Amino acid sequence: MAKKGSRVLIGLVCEVCNKQNYVVEKNKVNTPNPVKLAKYCNKCKKHTSHKEKKKLD
Image (cartoon, rainbow, N blue to C red):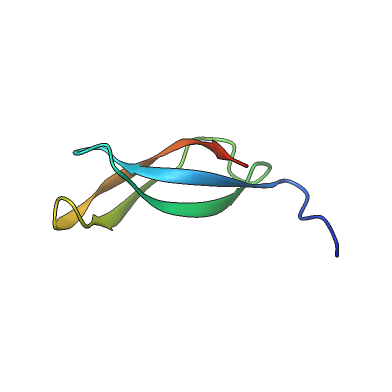
């Protein structure tokens, strides 16, 4: 199986309640800046902005 290369797993954390809700892949070469997306938070029960927390293994 081929290695994925420059793609890494990151966690998306809600900026309101600081709960990690999503784990996504990101290409380090194409998107060097931290990711910030509007996603649904189960704890807040609404759409909030989620930011990249850290790289996962």
